[in-house]
Length: 287
Image (cartoon, rainbow, N blue to C red; front, top):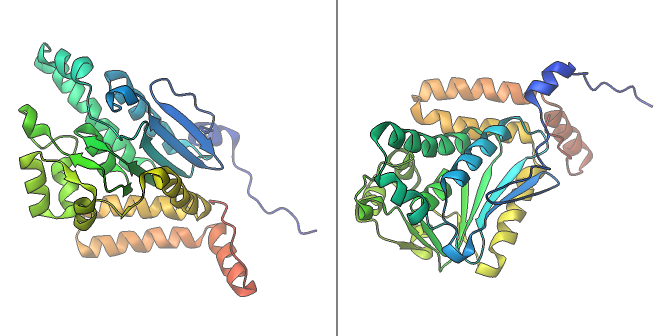
């Protein structure tokens, strides 16, 4: 029997940087995790799954914690009851905001922005499964995901202008043009109109359309493919896709050279080569 060459990692280092999260117990939405694929389900179907102050904060904290979760390798976010998310709850958020002074309003808008930052900086790929209503902050959650599966009956609206707000909310003016193009993003944000699934797919917002009854299953199946892949390499791909927005080409090429060299040091790279040589399917371990 060949000796075990797996390196021993210092326990204190592990405790600070690798934590289990599959067994997380959510308070303001549903959470389930099986074999490295986690599913977040916004679960207020009677109101089309709006967000509250509490769910914003819990989602932000969860995505921050996912940076250290070694047992979660891909994430699906969906809504219950045939809708994705109707945005911030009108009565629980919008009403109270009217009465708040500027410092507390800025506290709120920074919290919502911190949720998007946490989604972009967590290493796991996020697949949004979007059905029905996807409006306001719900559209932002879909936008901030790495991939989006939709349905023909989905209606996505960045409706901030329709409630007297600027369209520059939670990173929309930075991220949406990179997904659908500057002109389409401007028209979508200025008008606040709902874009149906087929048009959103043509624009590139949705990666693909799926029948409603199969939506979550197909999004989860793709997340499973990602989870079964090289997790460390996927995390670097996500990081580079995000960071290279602000890089010139030379800087981006150098950053990718460094990232790829790191991947070549991983055990997964060796697994892939040996599997290729043996004409078998590689089994990736995420390290």
